[in-house]
Amino acid sequence: GSIAGDLLTLTGGVVNVDGTYQVVQTNLSGGPALNLNRAVTTTLNLAGGNVGGSGHLTWTGTSSWSGGAFVGSGTTIIEPGATVDVTSNSNKGIDRTLQNQGTMNYTGTRLLFGLIANVSGTLENQAGGVLNIDGDGDFGPNFNPGHQFINDGTITKTGDAESIISVPFSNGGSVDIQQGTLRLDQGGTHAGSFQTSGTGNLRFLGGTHTIT
Image (cartoon, rainbow, N blue to C red):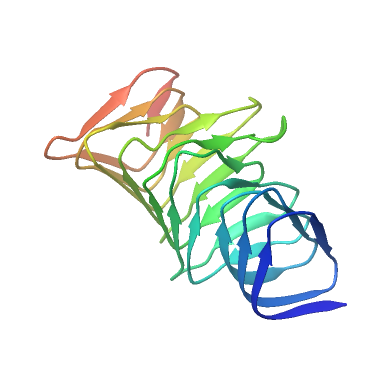
């Protein structure tokens, strides 16, 4: 079977997609589950529920992530040119691999690895990817296996608050701390650059960090 069109909204229930999914914009809120078991490209606004399945999800356009989690064996890919605004103080879960090749604007809090289950979560800010942290956005474990935060793109920290990365973090790209504090609570290997300017501060709190 197939689903196609301009807009699909899920506010409850479970939708398992094994057939064709060609929807321009997908909105989730409340507590639904959307399991995509084949490659899908869509503009996704995720306010609640879970997006899972074995298929790769390519996130396109300009959209928002204010709640909910990515689960399952697939990969979520923010494509080049796409923008995702990560907002709110609600839990947002990375329970699989999330690759950013576009732009993520993180103004909320509670971006948690292993939110739903005791599985590893990986955030990859890939070459060409931009991650803007404005405020006290945190990156932390909920359940606690081998999570990873890997930066090969550009991270910029603004806002006066302290942003805490409490999963292993490796920097092969550039990190520019212009305001506030970026705190690293776990170890990592860093072949890239850290730059502080203005009132920006880089704080190492825990783990072993190797600058190569």
